[in-house]
Image (cartoon, rainbow, N blue to C red; front, top):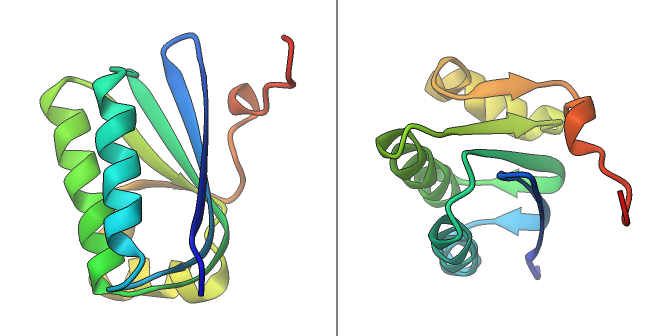
Length: 115
């Protein structure tokens, strides 16, 4: 399955919307998107996972790597709106206590185009 990643930045914050499955085959694409994004230096990144159907350990490692790089720079990386299957993976692995997990994308990230 194809993985789609779209990023919207505003005022030092970025919203990364992911759609599809994050696995061994698609994780490198996500990794390269995070590498590109983190070069722009946002202070906070929220990952909208409402469109992610599946995420394996390779995908979780990509998220952890991005979180580590953000923390090294004094920033934050949060997860928003994970579907039940992804939320269960976060809980089983204990990553729900590593990431800040929101039930929905935080209001300040729901920026309309042109605002």
